[in-house]
Length: 515
Image 1 (cartoon, helix red, strand yellow):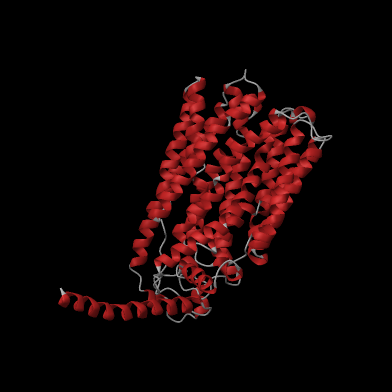
Image 2 (cartoon, rainbow, N blue to C red):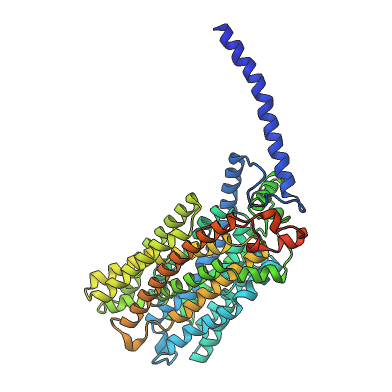
């Protein structure tokens, strides 16, 4: 027994110094990787440093608590401010503004026109100014616009306010996604994007509840009926935006709530996934920005988001109208409340799919079940006139379509290398997505009701296109990766300077697509 104790003590003496030496080596490697001018991957994009998993997990949990809640709240009211017009429509907006025919569709379209136009400039400005300042600023702007909707008295004025609302909201989703990419690894990003985008279906749920509560009041000062919805929600958004100027940290280096060791780890772990890059936040260059747009997988992903957004925005704007067509005898408040359950179920699945994606570090494969479930929902809409079947169909569409938002944004982010290219790839994804949103504003026309075969048929076609595009892109990515495996990376890079190698982006021979 004594001999055994002596051996154990002897082994412990040998192991302890080795363990301490290993920790010191990892610490030294992490500090070196975080410094500008040093590359943190080999020529094939494999990290050349080792990280302490426990330290990473503690850091990730800290970032989750300090970064995600603020942007999630801002996006919640961003989407409420955008989609509350559907609730206002049920409460008499069209009659008060003298609208008729397709005027409501025109009002919705104006928003997306400015959204599309300002999408790319907004995200480039987000990189230049810094998301810690830019995101609260645009949030304050659309809060003011929402407040302004409470005081419009005709269609031209309402169109003007909606145009400005679109301009301010244009940078919100891609800006937040870009902001989170400064903090998280590729595999982690999709679930964190989901944590703020899940606010979209929750906005549908809470928007209906808030609208019901507000409409139960007779007036707020001189403001009555649907105008109260915009007044209250606009004021809340403005208040949250002012708080965000204080609470939103621009990047790890400026985070007061991180220790110096944590800041170094936060920078190094993100940099360890950036092939051939010597810095995390690079200076913008035209070539990198162009390759962030002119990227085959980014463009394919953006097209998927375009078709998906036809369904998402269609639900956001027309869910109250669809429910009203299913239950025409119900009161306005009852109709508002019936829009809530599909959004709640959709929110749950919007987290389940990205959670699985994070754990598997896969994104492309999840577009396939998303498309199939959406197709099922619209087939039910078209095939049955039974109210229970059609209401159940809204659950299938909500379950699937909302999950594609975080998946497409994470995929667009994962298929580029530099920070500059990422700001453009995310803007590209959102620009295409909002073209889909523009299409959605004309998908449910008044003369097509109450069954809306054209609107439902359009959404069925869009989800079918998602299935085709997602499958074709997945097959192409695998085939191109096999082609790249045969390249001699050293020979391909021969004669290039470090700056030229950094600007290659997805054309780097060591790059592999991340399905």
